Amino acid sequence: MSSSPSSPPASSHGSKTATAPTGIDGQTWVVTGAARGLGLCLVRQLAARGARVFALSRHPGPDLPGVTHVPYDQSDETSIRSAARAIAGPVDHVIHNAAVRGDTGGLATLTADHLAEVMRINVAGPLLLTRSLLPCLKVQATLTFISSRAGSFTEGHDPDGDYAYCLSKAALNRAVAKLADDLPQRVLALHPGWIATDMGGPFAPDSPDLAAQRIVVLLSRPDGPKTGSFTDPSGHAIAP
Image (cartoon, rainbow, N blue to C red; front, top):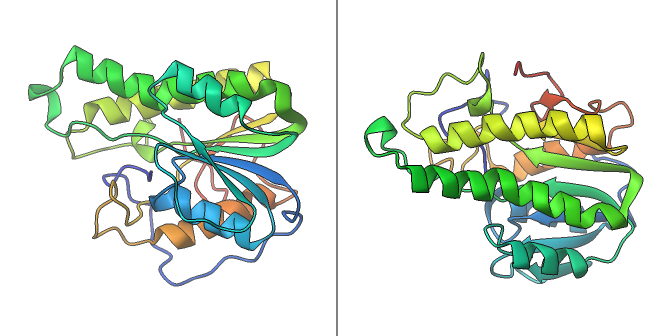
């Protein structure tokens, strides 16, 4: 999934490309929501650079060299535990990309059940998968949670009516800060930009493939974001 379509970056980088990362060949990466959109583009980028990738999704994506498809439903705790057991470590990177946007009708159509479901998928799901993966994570592994500027108090001004989505990303950002306090691994929240996916819509200024390239470059930099950071794909800090 992508970031909220109502949260565009300060500027679009259109056709610019990112410098190819180093050190990915032979690493093990886990990507959720891997069958389409940003998740699929991340899987393709990583596979092309020689990574071993566990691609978690409800339905398998295309067959690619070095990619293992793992059935995964982020709304179901049994599925989360089963997917974690299918992953052979040690794991270098986890990208928690799977998410739903949900209702966009504003306060008028918000229901408690819908809010609870979005929070279950967007917040509880990544946390439970993280817990299940702890035994196979390297101490120096990176856990990246794809968030959104829409979850920021100061930068997330949002004209759309996606209350549940915005609230879930704010909660996810706080969860990242808490995990960064508790875990030895590097834990990051990352706003991928406004990208042209099913969630972002066709008028978004950036492509998911370019966003994926930037994310892989950022996560592979030795001077990349510190644990507990909330940034865009260029590493620029976003205010909570």
